[in-house]
Image (tube, helix red, strand yellow):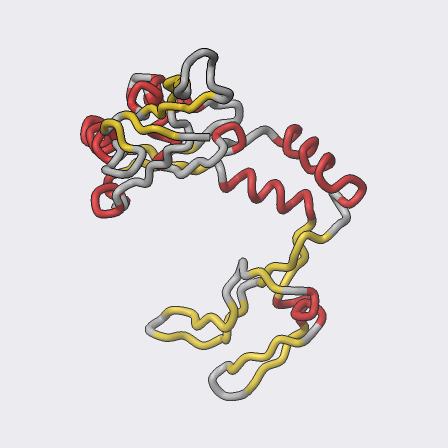
Length: 222
């Protein structure tokens, strides 16, 4: 379905076929035509449902679950800004391990990828809510980890070792984290599918330019 909506290019073949005096052209799909979702229409969370992807689930299966039509997989790709759909969905733990070992070798389980902060509370509250001196999950360097972290608890300056304010994240654990981030995606609510397709059809067309032939065809010389 997706490729039927993508406009064409009039591709200039080289060399010129003898005995013609002009270039030969072939019509091909413009696979490099990029489409960005109109933020004024589709960038509101109320338009989406959160979907948890199971290991081994394919995009066409997700599309069928969400819309009853496996051919709408391209909508999921666009709405989730998936650059490479083959690597945009989670895999099982075994595959994560294999891929990590290919990437890091002997440093897979012992090598430190980076350091992340741990949550540090001041011990004070504001309107019944704990005041946080340091948020968790911030990426820091080894110097931070090996130094002291200081913060104000409301009455005095407190100093704690960096090992209490941050933790090392090993290469394998980092790859597991990245894999889990792929597990939660957003699917456009089914009632908005027709609106999305119409928006796509309109915005993917060509505008006036020097290579313009029609709204669905332009010339590209090589």
